[in-house]
Length: 437
Image (cartoon, rainbow, N blue to C red; front, side):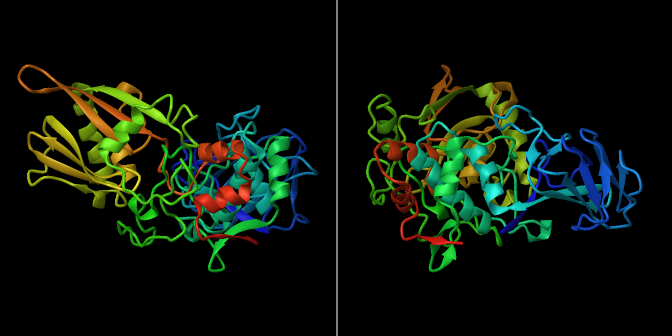
């Protein structure tokens, strides 16, 4: 099965590029069509630079290829060599930061920029996802669970990328991380072979197989973390196979966790009996001087307000002004204790921030080297001066990521407790079935 993967920029945020540079150890074939019979050959290691101007591609490093307006070109590696996109950098644990790919590239002009689309097989795509998403040191059954989830996500991503001319993108900020395939471990290879062609279905259709790093002892209901990808409605309709499950046992979570529950779990840092508590990402805390928080939070909120996908989840006070921060208060929590509404009480009124990713994102702070909070399963402690003014905020929390669906460190914990991959997937996606593609 073939899959089209949209390659994003180095910060993994955009699918439009100013240019691209490609090479291969075995040389390249550049063609105006998918077929290679009319291709132009490029010598090994020679880099081809491609840019777009006025809707037409311009190539440097190859003779005789002059695509017309809005015409794509296709690039293949010769023989069994891999394609190297020299203009991109990826963090993936391989020898080179330049991503290596198996398959062919379609380079498509879009005005003064271009799209880069990798055309590869589903199984080659899964190799890259496993190499990028889960350590080879994990138990085989945990890696097999990840392989099935990743294969399923490729067929049913949360965001429809049809407008981008691809099935999925390579960014973990949107889909799942795919940083290429330079090498692949024996453990990853075996996991793919042992689960070949297997996906998760519900009522005969591929499920939305979401996963994160660590759920902090309990996963969360889908509708408490995500908005509808088509309407941006929040909360969206529930998905029956993405329900909150306990990591202390194999049961659904029937109790909604309060702040007091989170504090109690956090106090048991060396003894909490869940499958994911072994991870260093299970417990976290950040100390923030009030001055540093105020210096950056207003800016981050104003940036998010300019994003049409984010602004519905930011409710300003009547004054629409951001004053001195007086307090932070979680107004509403999900089943696992994840904050889904946060009040930022300031001297000019209260801002209400909704949805876990938006809540985490308003804490972005270069002064504190903080990209966002690790999770929204959190609580706050405060220090004030003699006049009652806020001087310090400590945010403490559990887990890393949104916590919906399968969590990788939990899968590892259950594998160490001798659960097989089918049992692990059944735990995280209740009511789903394993089917063949």
